[in-house]
Amino acid sequence: MAGQRQANTKQKTAQTRTRTRAYHASLGAVRAFKFASFAALASAAALAPATVTALATLSALLVSGCRTPSVGLGEGPREYVASDYELVLKTWTRSEQLTTVNAMDNVLTVTATYESWDFRWAYTVRYAEDYRLTVDQRHALLERSLAETRDAHEFYVALYAEKHKWNDLTAKEPAWIVRLTDDEGTETAPSDIQKIKKPGAIELTYFPYSSPWRSAFRITFPKVRADGRPTISPGARWFGLRFAGAQGNQELIWEVEAPRKHLTQIARPHAG
Image 1 (tube, rainbow, N blue to C red):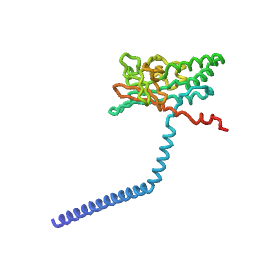
Image 2 (image 1 turned 90 degrees about the horizontal axis):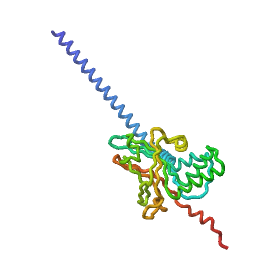
Image 3 (image 1 turned 90 degrees about the vertical axis):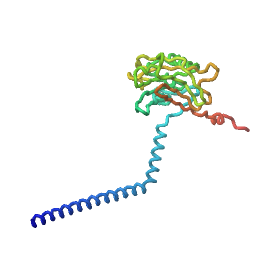
């Protein structure tokens, strides 16, 4: 009995020592982890000013690089060549997505090109080059296209909605109401919405964001409202297309360049 008791005592003592060693080992690991964490935090704190400066610089570069270009609404001759079309298209095209916060669903994706005087000039040059038009044919096409800008604002629009039936802007009860807006509070309904049932070679080539999964439209707005006011104010700093419906609303914005007054001053002759 005495031998058994002695053996049990030794076993309990060994178990206690094992637990103690395990405890101290785990405690050492915790301390080492804390020390490493504090060291990492100290290093991060020491690098914080340089890191913040670098991130700020990178952010500024990204913002400036991704910023959409402002547009000029002035008329007059242009000196475009066919290869300029892609850059001009990008200048006059805007794209936005409407995502619901609750479901995180992308309910509407819209891309639109404002067919301005400037855009039409570049488009005609590219089209004439592709189709090998004669000089007379090119002049006739350009005059006809530019004349359309004096009576209306026209947009080429391609969109994709979460549900296919929401794609149709010409439906009797459309899911999305489109308005032409500006920063002075002017809001205008379309005078015409023409659905392009199946985009062909012209749409897919000259508006490459078109696709079989997107519905394409030409949306026309009057240049002047019934009350005599222009639908885009001459002093507007931006104009846009707003798509609004039960799922929310989204606006595509074109910022307008400020008039270059210094050009007039340069043209004035010096006195004396």
